[in-house]
Length: 308
Image (cartoon, rainbow, N blue to C red):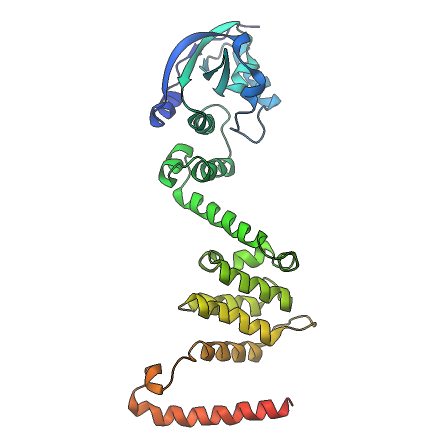
């Protein structure tokens, strides 16, 4: 096997400086490296890619220099933070490497951050997952995690919101959870999905009615709930639909049905009003609106009589 030419890796140094992790360059012995622990550094879903190792071997054979790997002392041995593929592709008995001094949490962050900028690299999805884990489990701030893993703060926040919504769904009764799909959850939107009571009301409505995630009924309900000024009003939107549309028959699009339920639901959200002034009507408007209300009352009375 050709002897490897190693060079200082400015990219890795920038990562370590950014994380304020001290490092030094020393010659290390290959037999000191713990291969098993190194492959379990949580940097990638697939720790070692044999194709990647093979391509590095060819590069070394052709005289291509490699950036130095990064290791951390572990007991009497060493664990690789960045450079598993380079290590497995070479056979030098001793070689120069960066040795870092840091705590366990910092080491885990370093492993993932190095794979963002050095070597094969992590996928965008993996980087977001690593960033979310760093925020939730390791206590890193969103802005710092975004910078470390080269993703946007928005991507991290969105992933965290999806994870939290999934946890809320998982807390629902099994009979409800089985009918409330991921598509239902995404359709309802981030604002409503982040509220446990609203999410529960929506899930109960879906379980009771069998309404599809892409149906007009469900979309209209989500729009009405989104417009609600309070949590109670948003919950009432779904509860009203649960009461009115619960049936053993499949739900089908019905334009008049949707308009009526929407109107009734909106009226229900105003039931605390005692006078027209409470509804912000000017005195000049009251006679006309009174006439319309009386006409509406006759219409509703006819509906109720006809329906038994």
